[in-house]
Image 1 (cartoon, rainbow, N blue to C red):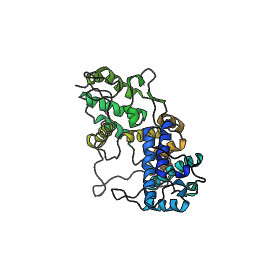
Image 2: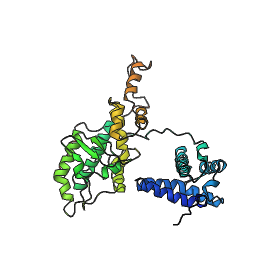
Image 3: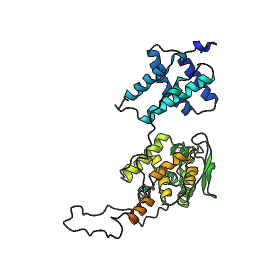
Image 4: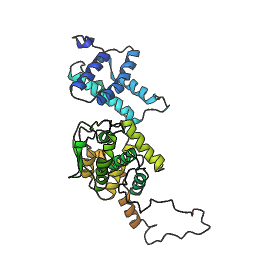
Length: 348
């Protein structure tokens, strides 16, 4: 595409394509580039429908009209954009126009005067307790090579707290059984980090490497740690399906989510057991501590202890005995079998 030398003649659409090319030149991932395209292209289309084709034509009133459009927009499922989704689109617009200003394609940046919607602070929908996690893992059938592989993958997710994509990209050389760690290469933000893995997960992992993975590589070996029956790396969709099935079908737990649920649960459980928030930050690979601190609002164990010690309804009282006429009485829910130790079983 030929772009005019006079920046005033370069259209919004041409500028957007140039900006996306710049992201590529800066080494940003294709996922990042696609995210900006998804957020900015609708704005360009919306402007063109209103005979606004050039960056210099974009004013604060026009931007406020776009903001009202986003607020009233309904997605295919009939739901509106959340405040955070609106912020994402407007923030991407602000970053793009800062780039235009730096390149002297506009004389001032009207997006800086735009008041963004208030950010919503959302907690993880739900997390697994320690007992629920063990029950879930024990519910998997490990009598087949792929079943055993699935158990090991979920054990590693729980132990390390790594992301779904980071699990998928693990290679054989990334496992350090001597130090009890995995090397996450080019994780989110294209950053490497070393993450500890506990003895329990390592025990399953060593059995998988010695007895199960060789059976999955009889046709081909791609070099990835977790592979299909044909030796190929698992897709992200397959990982999600495996985790979702384990949670809701095999363990029959009424919990939303899939792979990321193990990450949320690990962080919350470690905080409940006294881990330092900065250690959790390093394990999870969060750039900012604020991102990790959300788990302090989910961890409840210490608050429950304080509540039990200090609430007047709890201090010095005994739990009332249930009577036969008590309408709330009943058998307690079944709990995980304490005899199940979580040690690896032999795949058949």
